[in-house]
Amino acid sequence: MRKIRFLIPLFVTIIFWTCADVESEFNEDDVDIEITADQELSLPYRILDLDNCSNEILRIVRNIYDDPVGRKLFEKLEELRLYPIRISIDPKLEMAMAEYVGDCEINYSMNLIEDPKFDELIFHELIHIYQNGRWPKKIYNNEIEAYVAQY
Image 1: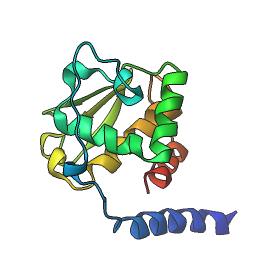
Image 2: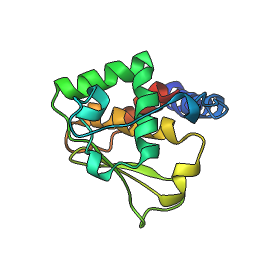
Image 3: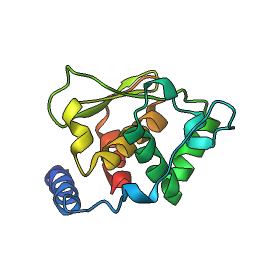
């Protein structure tokens, strides 16, 4: 049992350390998003609260959806009826922070949108919506699973 207690923090440290250098391949020029009222919305936009989404958030959601894992995540969120998903700025949050606050709402700090890993953080929080449903539960296993999925 003592060996396991030693290995768990070591394992978590290795995961975070090795995953910190992953670069995003997102190119804004490759994404063209224009949604009109008479247009039928495709999956990622059907489950978003579009009233609160900036163009940057829409681009990030499209980037996540274009990945096979992201597409499957959005399909599962829709299947479980975990929507509308609201992604919005919370001026009270500390620098470079995003969090799932419950009822399918993700908040992020104002300066986080400039972070090159912002799309990964949004994906991470979407995983928490999938894991927990409408109300978040603070469980270490969920956090580790979300970090592994993120990278």
